[in-house]
Image (cartoon, rainbow, N blue to C red; front, side, top):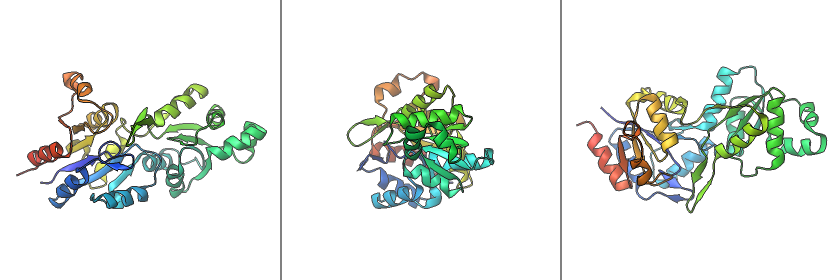
Length: 282
């Protein structure tokens, strides 16, 4: 019997432009041994094909159906639960726009809406066809007017959806503001709490496990976030290997209440390899 590994990306496989040493090789070894490796990421900036290219370059096992991202899950959620939505205001990067368009949605970029609103007010945005939903993720081009445009659309009745609420994400040198920082600004400005799709909500874990026909409770989640990866694993009843290669320190892991602690903790790829070898069925 093989393992089901649901693997976070930022802070686990890489940090910004830099790979986490040895992790891609460990995952390739596990895939060659017959384990199912599925990547589950809250990162809302990139398109699925970009992850496939990046992971292939790193030497990690990957196919397009083994990448489950928050933008993709958000697009599918909209189509399933809000079939009446046709036009979406996207506060985010190009990867989010492409995932929304992939399911047939018309996307209004927040930059366009902000420019129009700056000239004509919210009526100028509505005149072009009022967005029926606002989707927010990480937006590297965020401005005051983009927040204002999103908040105005939500107050006018648009459904508010967040790809995730990560406050920060790790890069090769430092932490950067995550989608949660942007979502919180829009939430305060609009007075509306969003539906959240990404971790710690269970949807991504469920979609990832179902991609290979398995139950998420049988998975081992490999992640670096206590409030995201660990919490999402707990929500679906999965075990967690908490990596100390991203946003969580050993002191923070040790400070968790006993009931909330991860199944195992790994400081690096070598410890991860040892844990997975020990967990593999004989």
